[in-house]
Amino acid sequence: MQANDLQILRAAAMPAALAGLIAVVAAAFAEGAKGALGAGIGVLVVAAFFTISLIAVTYAARVSPTMMMAAALGTFLTKILLLAVTLEYFADATVWHPGAFTLTVIACTICWTIGEARGFLKLKILYVDPTVKVPGVVEEKRT
Image (tube, rainbow, N blue to C red):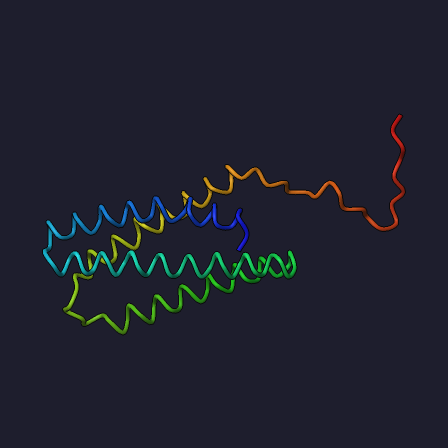
């Protein structure tokens, strides 16, 4: 990963971690140890899913700009399917509080997405590379 990628990861992870900490504390007060465990697992799920997604998209962008969109859509679909399978598998689990898990995943996802967007905006990355020469186009000399 390059420095830009790490800045985006940090910009996204910090608000999500803060929201996760607040969610764990709130769930511990509201539901006890099961609530805190559910919220903690929710924070870990969001952090793992979005970090893997960011790494995959970053790698794909280096391979080809076209691959970046395919990687983004592929990781999104994979995350949704894995989350659905995980939730179905643990539907009857009584180890943690499912409501705390759900609300934490939603809150951390929103915070991660906002943080990631804010991180991208702060980087001020050019959309067009001004140094690229287009084949077949003759440049005009400016005087």
